[in-house]
Length: 317
Length: 176
Image (cartoon, each protein chain N blue to C red):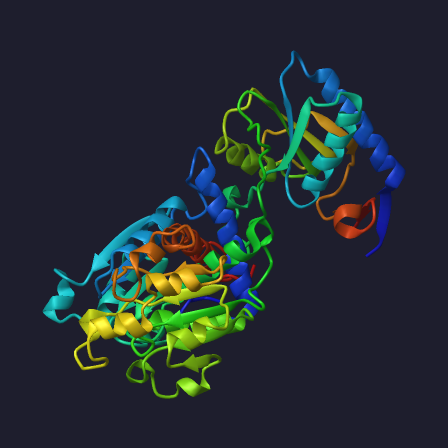
């Protein structure tokens, strides 16, 4: 594992190892000194062609906790707006000494191109490419779920037998895609719920059960319900009649939340549209992992950066 | 490659009992003792030392583990190492006498990393070092306070420590 581009090509052992290393990273948050010297002298570049707050801050804070130097680059106000290509931008960054590049791009496959085009020789971490993948989000979701299910005994374990319902805009969601592949690899049973208009072509071939109605999926008694954000910025076409109707049929309303099994957790990658895909009573309950997911995101990104950047062999621990 | 046995089960038990007594004798005042084993085999040895000390003077000591992976000075020169869990006892290490425990003392670099790792968790009153085998060839100004066996060796030789908790058998062997 030299790069982290997708969860589809992530082997089960590699995935479990990332989660295990993240456990040790999480443990450092309780220490007097929260910083580790592991990546001292390494340079991590955050290359963001698309707006992001939490992912960028999360990677930045992960790199700093590992004592790496961090350069953050956002396309706005840079030479990209003068027409500089991805290739030239990347080569410039590597010439400045980048050991790893965390890239978010609006085009699906941008991270893969950077990793395999032969332009540069740095570890590439995909932080979201178009509607393709967002692997660290899926890893932090799996980590959050594993901790809730197994607690202190989580190390070394996968998610065999866990039942996860993912609801919302599957069509545009890279979070959903990354989660489907990773959860399936880790042995979980995945259920997807979306209106027909928000189901991508070829969804039948995914390792998941597809439902059109949320109530059908919730009737399976899930361990976790993951609500996806309705991405208003991508909703240019009429995918569903009105937001009210969406909330009524596919939203995690107060009534649906109350009817869930008592130990089902509620996940959301953020930012949330309260009252649309998720009711406040669900978002603010103790069974909601929204803030845990943010905290765990830093641990997962520390683990990924450590595994990809520290050794001479790119993560073959 | 032939491995010559150096210590057997009984020898290891005897060495650990002697070290436990020495540690208690050297403990000045009423300071708490905290045994911190360096994973993997140091952790098992720390647990054994702790249970021996418990039999002699119950309640004076606690045991845990201290992973040093993130503090090693060779991270960029070798294959990626996965960190092991660190478990600091609930009482913490502030003002305690910490005894670092490892199986083999060789270059001293692991102990150097352990001293750095320890500083992330607090400020002990004193830090001691106990090892089952000291094979020499130090590369840093570090020495052990308590040694199970001094084992003169050539750098080309390899020292194997096997412990029941990890390997299913108690044995120290050396091979060229």
